[in-house]
Amino acid sequence: MRTISLEQLDKDIEGLRKLVADGKVPQPELDGLIELRDRLQHTSPDDWDAYGFLIEHLPPDDADDLLIVLKGHLLLEFQVREFVRRRMLNPDAVDAGRLSSFAMICLAEALCLPTEEPKWLWTRVKQLNALRNKLAHNLAINQVKNQIEDFVGEVSRRQTLASPTLGGAISRLYGMVKALGDLANDPDFRLPR
Picture 1 (cartoon, rainbow, N blue to C red):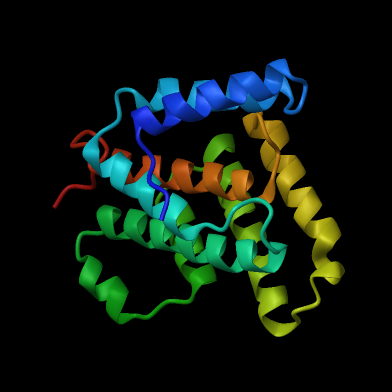
Picture 2: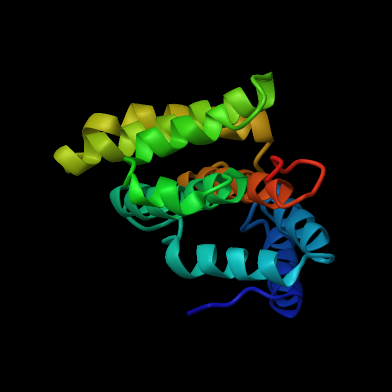
């Protein structure tokens, strides 16, 4: 398993600098890694654990799209369920309901303000859920290639991904839902108990 750390990112950045200088890798990939390193510099231990979990379980970009969608969906569903748990007064009751992934996504959306940013996020999470459902019943990835490209394109456009890949798009949504979960722990954001 490859772990993420500032030291590892520094090594990766130096290696990527050489590849960019040699014209083997486009500049935006280096820029994206530098931006990630800057964001992670002041990261909490909980965030490091979440990023490490993502890196450990999300297949690399050169893996089969089917595997990336299936595992990426599981990772994102974990964050959605964690967000809902943090927002509920009695989270065990939600767990006992054994809600489907789609129902949990709708519940998470209901726990957010109906403004543009959360609506956009939950639409993308639902889009990934629909992709997963199609692939769970039909393993022919070619039938959903256009939908995967639309998903990656929309996330990339809205979030300005340095490297617009399926894994990158899923990772960005994972981070956004994780951030909502962190916000749910903020006393100013929490529902009264």
